[in-house]
Image (cartoon, rainbow, N blue to C red; front, side, top):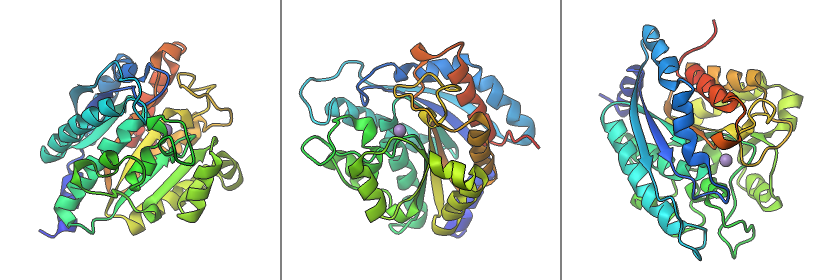
Length: 319
Ligand SMILES: [Mn+2]
């Protein structure tokens, strides 16, 4: 079998495993480690189980849990705990791929993208060698291109640096997690829904020519056109891709349970259009839903929205 055939065969199974990434030390405010529990309480498995008649199989692999208390004084904040959690999650997701399933990772804060994408990159490299072309579709209000303290952009929060680490910047142990890096090339990253972008992040996006669409672009171009472009990029330039969905990309009116509510986010309809295209796309090697903070939710609206979006992405399209 060719390597392309191996990837296609793997994806044709339409077999997924939910893995909770119960870790929230990558963000200054706590609470997203409760995200996996909240999504399960919002009937995640029943909703995804209903896709069985479409030939989609979903199992619940439980949670990977991390430290709940950080070490003061590290830069970035809680780095030792993040490193330990990252190797645990990457190893766990390696088992998911080895069992023939596509991981659906439920955060947790967005720092968990680093080990999640690293696991996808390792899997793709095993099939296609060192020149494997992994893509990342990043749906988020933030580009997460910050850097550790002492660099130009200084928050010290790991969940704001995930894409930087995947591009090979930042802390060496994270940039080279799993013994290789960078995990991604900027020409194979697309971002949708940006609203809160630091000056330094904007410069990186421009210099590295990352295909990025703000909420203004969503208004100007329409989400259908943007979806066509970003999934087109994944299809043309990548052997496979990870879709990382930060729930703060959605409007806080519909998704209040976030750490940084920003007005002007994606509507339920716009977010669902992205997920319908994901369901139709070839090459979806990983799916993430992150940053749901249940303590801030109203009647579990955000958790239910997250479940609905995941169900759509795995094949629960309307017509
Ligand atoms: Mn994020």
